[in-house]
Image (cartoon, rainbow, N blue to C red; front, side, top):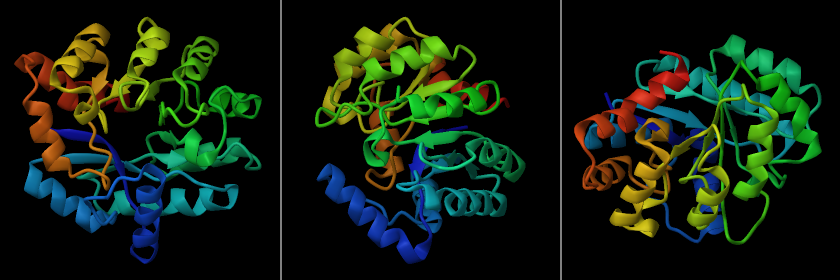
Amino acid sequence: MIIDFHSHIYPEKIAAKAVAATESFYTIPAMGRGTPEDLSAAGKRGGIDRFVVFSAAAVPAQVESINTYIAAVCAENAAAFTGFGTLHPDMKNPGAEIERMISLGLKGVKFHPDMQKFNIDDDRMMDIYGGLEGKLPVIFHTGDYRYTYSHPARLAPVLDAFPRLAVIAAHFGGWSLFDLALEYLRTRRCYFDLSSSIPYLGRRRAEELIRIYGAERMLFGSDYPIWDPGECLAEFLELRLNPAEQERILSGTALEILGE
């Protein structure tokens, strides 16, 4: 089984606008349309069996509708999609929404501190992390040389303060800050995904970081719709990893996090 642990989807009526906003934010042209149908087709073309899908709420008012939408898409296609919900630091009663996410069948939470404009170690987030600890895993966008919201140095104290919070630090723990991520996260208890990273790192450095962190901490991810999942998989398979490392990254770690 091949699981892509990092994909974004949007309703058809807003997908073009959402994808355009992502293109503008990163100044990278997107390769996908951002809809569930387009992602499913990309998976079939690329040989990917399953996707973890999500979308981050830019404002508190979006939280409930995003979570309801993601849950509905995953219920319609449970074999191919597993949903993560979203929360926002300024929302009211996040504890109630956490319980609602669980009741909807969502399996985790995605935060994008740079787009949501909060520091990972913001005091407003502490009760949210406490409410998630031991209940749902969290995936953070981490790293960006233009901002400090998602700097790996901000994630380190959160990992220390919430030892039962399962955390995935996306983009090798720090997009465009890869070596700083290594400095802060190498020995801390968290997972990492490979999304939006190998083209910037190069094959040799990607292989080195996978082995430094350990394949058991790594997850395959494409960051669809910016990248094509099948092309990301082909790129990953070009790395000089042994079959056990490949299996762990492509599905083993993901199934562990999801409790399957």
